[in-house]
Length: 297
Image (cartoon, rainbow, N blue to C red):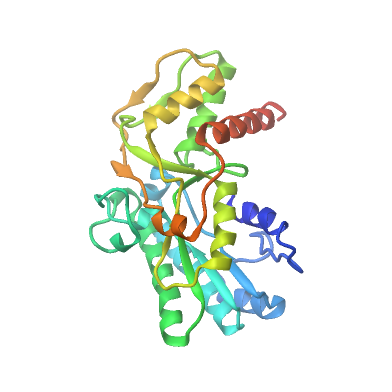
């Protein structure tokens, strides 16, 4: 999802070429294959958007995969980029790198100040390692490698598999299927009380291009909308978009995850960047796109 959005946004930049390494053509977990690809293509700049991602269920069920796969992907791409003389690299982390009970809104210096959320600590540890690897190459070799921490993203190309998706695509799919069946409600994991921040992936891509041009520091930088909302509230928005009229049903036997996760966007705003797509506007468009795609199958 993020890689596709970055590629689309780069088309507006007048790049001589936009290189992509689709999964079908390059296994980023194979060091030699990655080294060969980067050496042959000689990119000037690299966005490390590839990762094994998923929601609470996927993270909690496959901890070894989330830790090992992400460690291999980031280590191979970052080292190959350095060896090939890439001018600048941007590594995408995640808001889950921050402590479970971090002071809100979460500033970048909260990293490594407390315990992680247990349901996704394996993914978080891998992402923290990627940040530290970029910092290490900068410290030892002077490499212009930076790290950005996107908040919860949604948009075109999202994963709607209920076994591995994040909360927004899961709610969108559930709302669509409820409407298709003639139900008037959707069932939601947990209490609905946790607060989350969401950003449209097109806004994220725009921010990442902006950072590639305007940011060159060792410290990671947050990329978010600057506002959060409860899972209950976002489910109500999606239910209304889908035309559902019944009450939401909460499965309190399922975990909530981190109680609140709102990142401070002060550093990015101070550089001059702001998001443009409101949550309701973005959700409406994404729901329409998913409905059209699902109904055509």
